[in-house]
Length: 170
Figure (cartoon, rainbow, N blue to C red):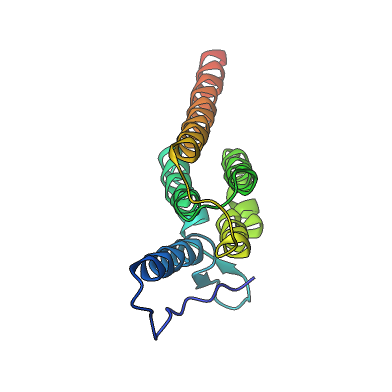
């Protein structure tokens, strides 16, 4: 599940190709940084910033998932089909839901690696003959990201409510 982080050396003079190459490189970089940049000493287990930053209650999950959503935006810019964007959004949603469980969610995030999965989906479909993202595609992605943010916000509100109930019971 390793991601190739090398940039294309002999870039084409075609601005579109350079732009596509740069976007793919950014997506690969973010997935690597969030999911598998570091190795836990003494093991072969690779982790990224996602499970580390997610240890910060509420804010950590928000930052990690917003950063992971950049890969989704790049996929829309490169004209990936909507069904693939949906799959990518579901990967982010699963990561968000799992990450909401204190500590356990961070451990599961090390295994699940939603960002690496999303880059693999992106690479599978980029370059194929598909229409480029238009306003409908952008509306779809924006609605998906807003939905994910609402989901994350709901999780945070629910967590605060649970803590309040526990506090009142004491």
